[in-house]
Length: 279
Image 1 (cartoon, helix red, strand yellow):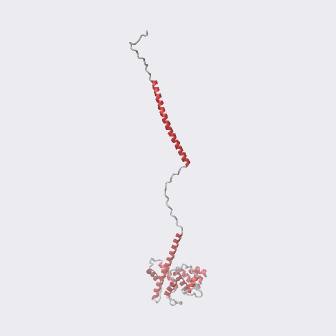
Image 2 (cartoon, helix red, strand yellow):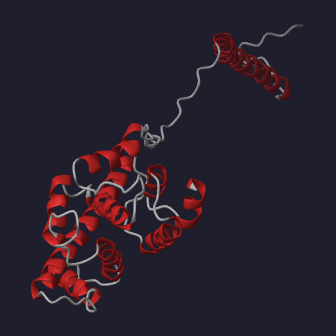
C-alpha cells in the first residue's frame, strides 16, 4: 500500500500547497478509508515522530484506528505549509480562529480540506498578478471563495483573513528559501580561491648582454695592435718622407748639374805692355 500510495498521490514533501497532489490523496483515501503513518510520511516528507508530536500536542486530531483520514491529512498539510514562517502554536490558534477548538467539528465553518484547496487556488492566482499588496491578495482570495456560502456573514470575513495570512506566509517561505539558496552560492564563491588578476607586463628595453671575457680581451688586444701598427706606420712614413725629400733634392741637383754645359773659362789676357816675347 505504501508504494501504491506514492504512485497515486505523488509527493507534496516540498510543503508548497499542491492542489493536484491533494486531489490524488483524496482519491486514495476514498479507496482505502485512510492512510497509515508511514504512508502519510511518504506523501508529506515529514518524519513519523513529527506527526506523532503534533497529534500529542492536539494540533492534529488523533487518527481513528491508526488511520489518517482527510481531515487529518488536510491539517497536516496546512501546518507543513506554514511552519517555516509561523510558529506552530500560532498556526493552531489560526485554525481555531477559523473552525473553533472542538474536536467534533461542531464549530467548523469550512472543511479544512476545502480550506487547503482554497489556499492552493489562491496561490496560483496570486502568482499571475502583479499586485502583491494586502488589498491585491484579498481581492484574489475573494475571487477564490466567491462560491462559499454560510448563514453567518462573519464566517466569510474570517476565511478571507485566514487565507490572506496563509498566502503571505507561503510567499515568505518561498522568499526565504530563495534567499538561503542565493546565500549558499555566495558562500561557495567566498570559499573558492579567487583568480589572481594578471598584472600588466612592463615593456623594458633589454640591456645588451656583455660579451664574453675572452672575446673582449681578444678584441681589445686587436685594437691595441692595430693602433700600434698605425702609429708605427705614421712614424715610419714621416722619417722616410723626409729622407726621400733630401734624396730627391740631391738627385735633382746632380741632374741639373749634368744638364747644364759649363762655359769654357779662358784665362784673362795680359795687357800688351807686359807681354814678353818668348823669343
